[in-house]
Image 1 (cartoon, rainbow, N blue to C red):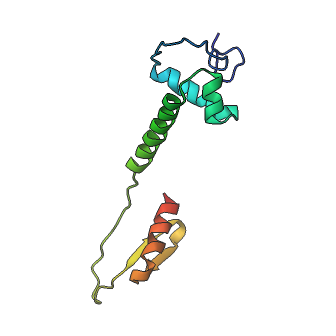
Image 2: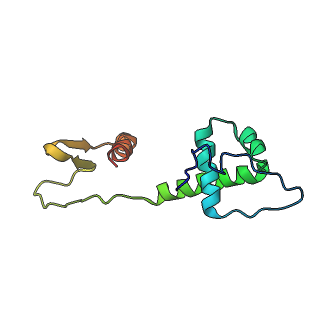
Amino acid sequence: MMITPLDPKSPILQPLAPLPGKRIQRSREERDAILDAFESSGLSAPDFAAYHHLNYQTFAAWRRRRRHEAAQTESAEFTFVEMTHSQQSEPPQAGVSISLAGGAQAVFDSEDQVPLVAALIKALV
């Protein structure tokens, strides 16, 4: 029988017995299960840590590490954009042209529109 972190019989939801003066090393899976249980508990971080006899500073460090890892994963993602160059007889124009599905095209030809280009690309990704 598999016990999920939200199962009332789960050891994660049961208060952990305090072990005075003992340091408990938790595996990555245990920390992730505890953090998942916290996120669905509705308790504040200090209340959750106290209920489970976790050192609040340790628990807060686990949360920071998880947020940091998630942020690094998000920033490491990127999207390929196909760009083409065509030879035209007219002088080149400064700016950016983005062709969207369905034939729509967005043309940005001013430096003032750079934030709009960034916002559009971010929204499309």
